[in-house]
Amino acid sequence: MTVKDCSRNHHHHRKRLYCHPLATLLGFIVLALFLVLVIIYLILRPTKPRFILQDAAVSAFNLSAANLLTTSLQVTLSSRNPNERIGIYYDKLEVYASYHSQQITPRTVLPSSYQGHKDTTVWSLNLNGNSVPLAPYLAVALKQERLTGTVLIKMRVEGRIRWKVSTFISGKYHLHVNCPAYVNFGSKSNGLAMGPAINYQLIMNCHVDT
Image 1: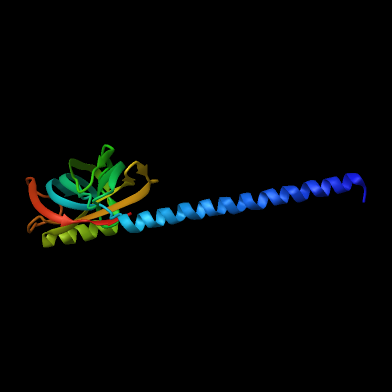
Image 2: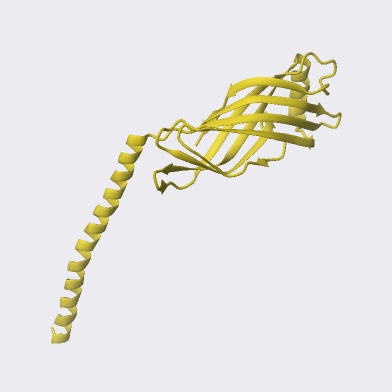
């Protein structure tokens, strides 16, 4: 082995000696950060927000002979942050109404907001859908429900939230809210159209997924 080869091997050996402690230190740092996050989660136990559909004013819910549905709703939604030490950022929440599996109103975007500890936020908004084509099987189901007088409409909220603990702000988490509203239209002769606006004090708890 030449002197040059020995020098190269010695340099490679020293490089390996330096890399091992650095990799070990980096592993300890990552593990420590992970343990800190786990401890914070176990101590704070972040709880998802609670949504309530407070009321809904239905001024139009009419199905044409061509299976085109016109909907006009005014709804009041509230959200409460149940956490004592965690704030919630709401990023670009979108609200719309659906009938069974189909969206029947365009999405209404709520302004971004921050919700402090134990705070409650209330939104009042209009959901309007004009001549939305309804799937044939849903049109049949809607006519049958209207004849019985009660129709299930769901208010859905979709968006993203972030958790805030002191100065720490988490990444974004998806938020899905489903608020069922059993609306009683009364007995109808044709199951297609409704009369004047009807206001319902619902106070319906919503299902929340994050």
